[in-house]
Amino acid sequence: MGVTAAEEPRAETPLTAPGEIVHTGAAEYPGLDSWRDLPLKQQPHWQDHPDFDSAYAELSANPPLVFAGEVDKLKRRLAKVAQGEAFLLQGGDCAETFSDITAEKISAKVKTLLQMAVVLTYGAALPVVKMGRMAGQYAKPRSSDAETRDGVTLPSFRGEIVNGFEFTEESRLPDPKRMVEAYHKSASTLNLIRAFTEGGFADLRAVQQWNKGFMENPAHAKYERIAGEIDRAVRFMSACGVEFEGLRRTEFYSAHEALLLDYERALTRIDSRTGMPYVTSGHFVWIGERTRDLDGAHVDYLSRVRNPLGVKLGPSTTAQDALDYIEKLDPQREPGRLTFITRMGAAQIREKLPALVEAVRDSGAKVVWVTDPMHGNTITAKNGYKTRRFDDVMDEVRGFFEVHQAAGTYPGGLHVEMTGDDVAECLGGSDVIDESAFDARYESLVDPRLNHKQSLEMAFLVAEALTQ
Ligand code: PEP
Ligand code: MN
Image (cartoon, rainbow, N blue to C red; front, side, top):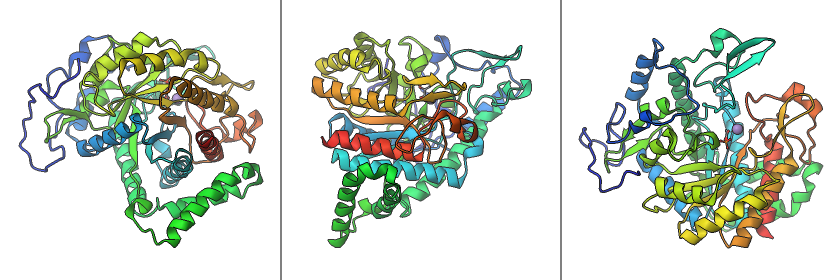
């Protein structure tokens, strides 16, 4: 039951800053607490914790991390993607960690995403909407509530917004104060991202210089043609004296899985312009594969906020499910509102995706289709690490393009788990990573990420697929 524009808003504070959210305090709006009576998965049981109420109250009183005006702008950008006039790039860690919120790591990640975006812009010959799994990607769904090691059983790690990774009783106990810390870490992350992307760091010419560094490695010589063409185009624009702002700064949006509903609820605010509720923890939020029950709490809650939404669709999704998500989450058929992020696995995408794409196409609904080629291709390496093969990841991306081409629909984007650092977590790539590197360079607490070079290589391969 989506909130519709016709419903009577209950804004309680007068307008003081046109176009932005002025409320403090978790939003009051009909239906925003209905999720509490519905089946709710993947949450810590911490409402009775002595610090729960104060943490919730503090979050509720804090300023929003993002503004409704920005969120609406993103929705307009995503509407272009749905129409086949732009491409969406989403990337970042599986799980952010508090200790990795440093200028160095954030800038490496943003740089890598900007580099990928330049290459994809060329491949798609379209604008690329850039979005980080950043500034809020702290809550993780787990396949089991508990973990046993050497006969000791403790609660599973649910992301640093809930508990600690260290395998001790104290660390694994859910602590609501962590929500407040995640909020502050997200605020500093966003602050840096805003400075980077608006202060000349994202200048197209500089980004292209960074890509040249990548090309100097013989392992990547096969991308020379594309890199050379981009370089020529950028030099041509410079020679023509093109100085427009679009080259110097860029829009960059934040995204995360809206898993922890206490956090999302506390950070929901009413937009002073429209009187409508927005999740202000990030611009774009998605519902994960494990919490996408049509009658569950997550789908209900997100149906009531105005942000653009994603839903992860795994291989068990039926065509009817896809149509039901559209009905529940985008009853107004609002362009840019709904993104389907498919994660079928390389082995299944060509078989499972066509029915979904065709049903949505035939219904007339316009959604954004994105491929997450990571989560359906996770394997356990012989030495016990969770990993993914670069070739499987690429194969799923190719399958995604093939299915959309056959259905006459638009493959709108790419969603990857990546980092700007030189980690060794995924296998393969031209600069080959094998299992022997894991002990020294595996850093992820949850899922394996593409490293800097693998991320760029993926962008070149996708660009190649797009220009064929
Ligand atoms: C994730 O994106 O990290 C994740 C858990 O994905 P999914 O919900 O697709 O399994
Ligand atoms: Mn993951």
